[in-house]
Figure: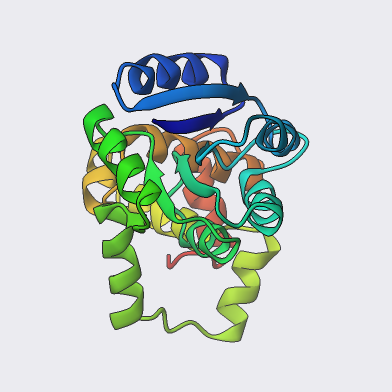
Length: 218
């Protein structure tokens, strides 16, 4: 049996994953946690083989929890399961020791197969993220220091800027998702983050402010 600990701050997600993965004959869901600190405590208590870890959680995020778990229990495998495809998160998670980084839009059977792969020593990165990593490696962004500083003033990530550029072209959420290899739910999350960081309430205002500030081209 593969003993799995599920970590996510949303109860519905924890319950859904417990039901889906618990239905696999070779899995045992030994516990669930709602934040990183609880994940560390339960890892000590329950000795899971694999921790399925969300990124954004209260008290302690998934990256920091992964780092601490891998430091104390190097043989415990960690798979990140999140809605965020931002490469910064991918690099941070893998740098913290995670053996996998997959998206919540993954099919349940593919998730179960991924858990088995990672448990047996493999590393798993979804196709969408692999495409981004390859694209960045082949075509790194050629930005001036001034351009990067403008974006950093608003703490916009590379991916959020790409979404903004698509918004400026009048693209719908679905069109953005297809263009950037994202799910529509992830696009909505990015747009919400953009509104918050730019302190605006709609697409047109976001695009106007981004152009005004030189974040994207006019």
